[in-house]
Length: 320
Image (cartoon, rainbow, N blue to C red; front, side, top):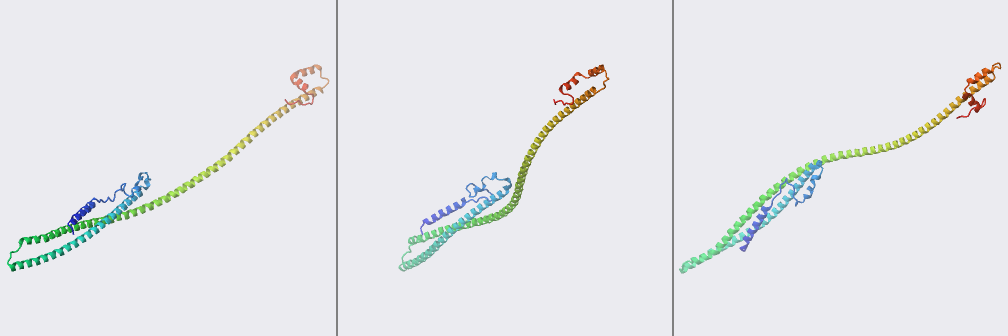
């Protein structure tokens, strides 16, 4: 064993402790940062429908807890590896300490044996005891004792670090269990929310189906109404045409009837005039000429001359 090993071990321990102090566990209720693996799940949360906000929040909490759980597992695995490394280092140091103790015991036994031999020889020959050489011979075991003390200090430091890592591992296990409990609770809440969402989705689907059916009925009714409207328009057009034709026919019939009535009236007047003429011509021969002249004067010139000039007795005047 060289003297550079304790300093390298101390440097390793300081680096390990410094790295352990830099580890920070994220809060369980926090939102993952941009470097977290689930940051993409939180993008555009404001654009989501407010009806799904509760389920999205529960999903976000669940993802946060999953991230925290994985972080705890990573830290626990790292702490376990560090503990194994420190345990191996501790076992190695204990083996070295045992080896040094055995060497120290052998050195002390060899030293005591040498002292006994030197003392017996000095006493045998009456020589003074060599104090300076004894101090020089004692310096090497003292160095070994100092090294053993230093190794004991390093072993104690390694044990303290092992205990510290054990406490951290226990804390991580507790945090992991808490995260698992919260994750299970959130999963139960999420299942319940998903169940209620499924019920709402079913109702919405039924309403949408009813709405589609109603729209189809409205379209069908509009088509039927347009067909009926077309038939009604054609019927009205035909009726208006028939009414116009009937009015024209009635007007023509009325004109013909009016002409016929005028013709009958004129014919009656002519017949009456003819009758008067016949009666006047077949009258009594004893009537005087002055009376005939008086009767002739009573008849207007237009009434008598017109028909007689146009027609003779018994003839019909043409229609005007």
